[in-house]
Image 1 (tube, rainbow, N blue to C red):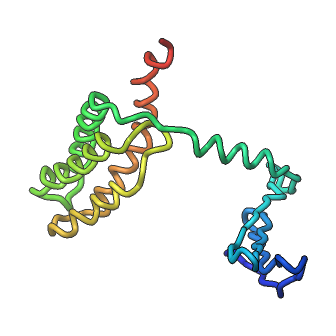
Image 2: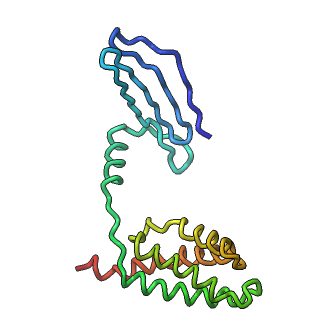
Length: 185
């Protein structure tokens, strides 16, 4: 739960005043909103001042280091999807899902159609959005369950669970193996 504390405005000078202070307990930071009456603008300054350590105690964290960390994270660009990797991974996914779902009684004669829907959504995601570890999203798997349910096919949630479990166990690892030769050149 995020709590915000509002305080009465504190007059700093005739041209500006602090009007809002918020403290977020899960990510301790202090934010000041400053309104400039003569400029009719507002400035917000946030400073993260505490960072939890491994043993549960808090340590002081200087503002400049968090700003650098945030800047570096924002500047990182994930690689573009690799079509050959997407094709290879889609085949592995389809093979696994067909084998896994064929063992379940709930699919009956619809197992190939269920696998086809899941494979199409997974393939589209790999070809358009997956760019390596850190980019495996849950949305395609939610789309699988929703699409299966909308089409009246059995076992949408179970198929999506099996699909995401396989993806979590294999996709990032397979990407690292696939791109290992590229990073050494």
